[in-house]
Length: 102
Image (tube, rainbow, N blue to C red; front, side, top):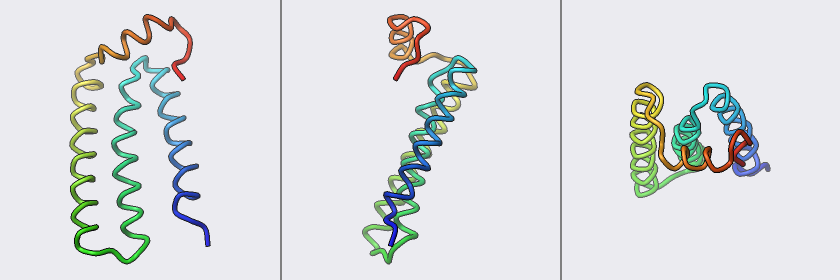
């Protein structure tokens, strides 16, 4: 039987690689943080749907999903729609120049 990790890891790797590529094209690496939040929520939901879960596990996944979704929405509004730059990324980009951040 294929484990959830073996399925979700390549999917998340492709998602994050594509997100990074798009972030480089639009010149806003804050997009990567949005994808991380959504990826965390997706893995939690996927794990919950995969097996029988207890009430405690459901509550935990619900809380993580709400947190990750709220974080992603906040970052979308502030970093992408309002075009605010995260100072940490700005400092990294200044230090690294035009080289990819990896």
